[in-house]
Amino acid sequence: MPTISRRHLAALAAAFAFTVFGIAATQAQQLPKITVSSLTLPVFNPLVWNIMKAKGFDKKHGFELDAKAYPSISAFYAAFATGETDVVIGGPTILQKLYQEGVPVRIIGTGFTLADLVIFAKDDKIKSLADLKGKQLAVDMGGSQFQVVKMYANAKGLELGKDIIVVNANFALARAQLEADRVEAALVIEPLASIILKQNPTWKVIFNGAVGWKEITGQDGWEIVTAMRADAIAKNPNAPKMLLAALQDVAKFIHTETEAADKIANETLKLPPGILTAAVASKRLSMIMQPAWEPATRKSITDMMERAVKAGFYPKMPDEKIIYAP
Image 1 (spheres, rainbow, N blue to C red):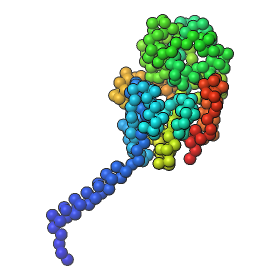
Image 2: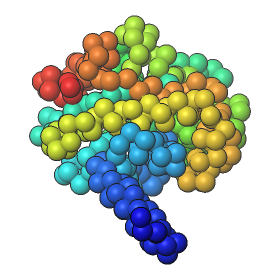
Image 3: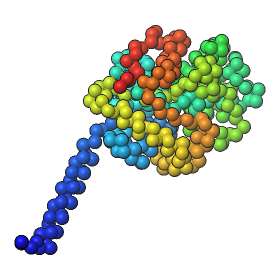
């Protein structure tokens, strides 16, 4: 029997290693890519993708995340509308608008609850929206948050723009307007809400989106939900379930390893240390990932859309295809 030299053995080992690692590299390269809209703004939307990438939750569930960052919310949605990105996490009533404009929206899951939508006031005498009659509220009128507050106000017999004077302002400007006493109240979302409370502990929360929505509907509402384009699903039918599984890992990480998530928020979004922790501890930041096709979840999402129609934001309800069904 011929003997095998050490050199021959080394060559065989090298060839074997090259084959094994070559196959692994090829498999890694073959992971399907899911492209998502993100933001350069210091909000929690990009943190979801930052955590997913940092912790490798995308590859764990069989895909490669490609997050494209945009400097404004309008550009963020436009990228999804044109097909530049496959996925967006956004307001359900804004997605309703895109769908009715012909964008192939398929809502695949939930996201953040309405708990991170808050209205601040400095005057102790102002304790609710009703106390803002004849006073000024700074709010971004182009956002889904304004629609939620308007729907709540309507249910309470109040009309924004008539009973309560509305000053159009993005979240940062709304805060500045309240600081300068140009308005009596301001609407903001997390993480700005936690930053404000840290810097201005005497400011009062007179409205919380989750509490208000449950008061008028008896169920939870959603600040943002997760949507994927129908053409992206057609290319990769497993994409919705893979993405939802990765997002569920992100939600679990935020709520059970908050200190580590806070560090990622500080490193990637430049949020002050402790802000994410404060938002989670206060229960204002609550990320809950549920499949949109489950009956109770579908109802909670479509109820928001029905109320948006009743409030006059849109002429009619979208058809049932807006909610993805596997």
